[in-house]
Image (cartoon, rainbow, N blue to C red):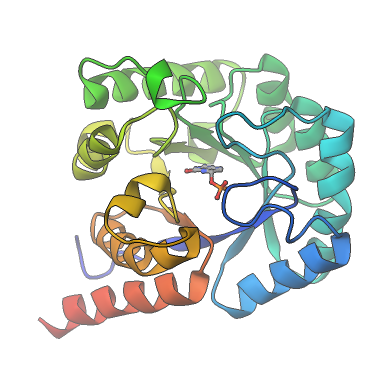
Length: 265
Ligand code: PMM
C-alpha cells in the first residue's frame, strides 16, 4: 500500500432498532439515538450509518413506514449538526425519506436488488454501498468457491446499478461479511479482498462484533471490539475505502498504529 494512500473512513454504527444483535434497544428513543450519533463522531467516526431494521437472522421485518419513522428524525438532527450520514436500508421509500432529510450515502444490505432504490439513489446523486448477501443465514449461501461467487455476484449488482444510472464514481462494494457466510468463508473473503475488487471501485468492509469473531474472544459482542480494531487496521493496510464499526475510538487508534508503522519504515 503506498504511503500516500489515505486512511479508510470510519463508519459508526447507529441502529435505531429494538433488536439488532449488539446494540438493539439502546437507541430506539430518538434523543438517545441522536446523542449516540454525536458520540460516535466525537469518538472518531467520519460517517454515521443509521439503520432502522435489524439484519440479524430471524429478525422480524419492519414495515417501511415504521422504519422511516425511526430513522428520519435522527438523520435530520445529525445532518443539522454537520454530520455526514449514511442510511442503512433495503427499502426505496426509506432511502428516499433519508436522502430528503440530508443523508448522502445509501447503504443497501440487499446490494441494490430493488430497482426503485437504484432509481432513487441515481436521481439523488448520493453514494451507494452495494453489500453482498444471498440470504439471512449461513445455510442460504451454499458456496462452492465463496471468493469467486461473491466476486461474480458483486459484479452483477454493480452492472445493474450502473444500468439504472448510478455512476461508477458513486458506487462502493462490500463483501457482506457474516451475511449467509460461515466463519471460514468470512476469513477466505477477508484474505482475498483483491480478488473481490470490481473495476477499482471503492470497498467498504464491516466486521464489527460479528459472530465469527466470537471464536477468538469469549464474552458478549462488545468484547469483540479489540479484534475488530486489529482487523480494521489490517483492512486499512489492504487499502479499503471504509470500515463500519461500533467502536470508532478503538478502530481509529488501531488504524493510526498501522499508519505510523508504515510511515516509520
Ligand atoms: N453489517 C450489518 C448491517 N449493515 N452494512 C454494510 N454495508 N456492511 C455490513 O457488513 C453490515 C451492514 C450488521 O451489523 P449490525 O447489526 O451491527 O448493524
